[in-house]
Image (cartoon, rainbow, N blue to C red):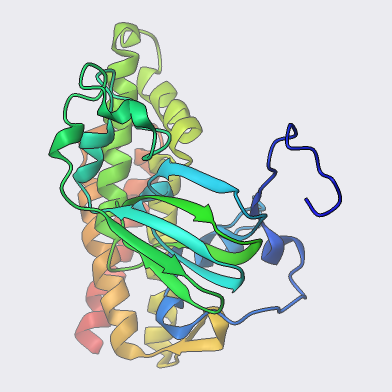
Length: 297
């Protein structure tokens, strides 16, 4: 911009740069301890079959922005500004329905004047609650599960951002997964007589949501198994930022994951999948291991 950058060229914004994944030896930051219990990134960084995570760096000039949205998997998110300022507008769960048009599409920009068009956005006038935050350099912001938000860069800004899930919001992730599968099934309900329809729905779920029931089961089994090992060995689990998780936190994680795994195991959509035949035994075994570990402790 200071070198005659043409105003006709779009304002470019580098988003979702997997810096930590791509440069694992560059330890440029330490995850704050209050964000260290991060099942999502713990699981994905442990996998050798995929190279993926939910740890990002954003770099954007003044005037760049992120449209109205809620975070992936109904996860928590945290963001720390290394430099620059951001303006956040956040809406508690449920308020987003007033920012949805008559076709069920979420608004792209919460400051778009067309939101006041009642023929298009019928319930916009019922919008009651929104929070506005100015985030300064060196400050962290935490976004709870299901809170829709929009973000503007007020200066040239660089930030570190993580999406994360743990024992406090795993139930919301499960509900979001189920809800998205229901939406997929409704969308292609006219094809339900096709062979392997349930499996095709899972493929579409993975494509649209980023996760399917098989991966979710694997995710829960990994979290439980990892914590059972440390519980049995009476050792602390090292998590992000070189923080350590003690016995009470291990037990909390195990029980929260177990509750969700029980819901998954009893879900009729999961029971119809080919994968369930194998998973059923794995789930039974790990449930027995949990009972044994908890009795011992």
